[in-house]
Amino acid sequence: MTALLRYQSGLLLRSQRWLAPLLLYAAFIGVGVQAGEPVLGALGFSAAALLPVSAWTVRICLTQEPPAARGVVAAAAGRGRAHLAALLTGAAWPVLVGTVAVLAVTAIADRRGVTVPAAVSAGLLAASACALTGAVVGALASRPFVRAPGWSLAALVLGSLLALVTTGSPAKYAMTALVTGARTTTADPPWLACAGALLLAAATAALASRATARLE
Image (cartoon, rainbow, N blue to C red; front, side, top):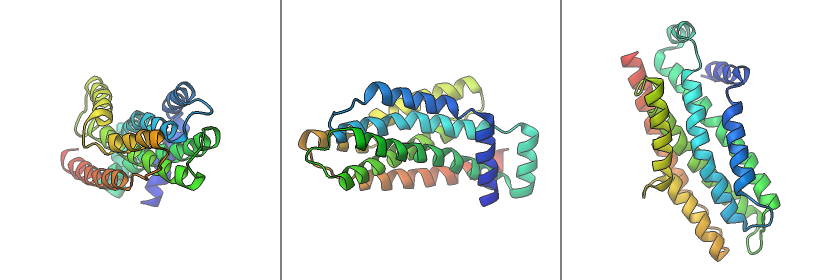
């Protein structure tokens, strides 16, 4: 699996297709986060903005291989494992970007009433919850579930929106916890949201890998 992850990461970096979602996230942060605003609210916004970026990155990783190359990798490692490696790569990079964003936002925001460790831990958990939820959206909006590019893009946008506003979504729960904490200056790390997103992502990855092995 390590070799597959290196292969998928190399493809993503060399293709420079990661640049568009990264610039989108930077634009979200630049417009939506201002220096001196309450740290928990800023962290909640930065985590929420990570969801569509993660969904987009996962879709990029699932569609970046030419059919011939995908066939060779599938023959060598198995279709399910190859698909899982692409999913993991697409989910890992947004988590890394989100971690950097959490540290940057914590540094410039108003931390009055909130300690740095509390803000960072809450921000990291919320960012992970949103990134993993976005990965679920990206996985379900891509092959083997949705093959047509147009329908895939529509499903990606609609799924990202629903994941942010639907009650019960780990991303919405994490974002709401931080926004509420900004009003009370109480950092309550969204452990349950992160755990729920992790379980949901694991179940989706297993389903997608199995479907790929059977349908492609």
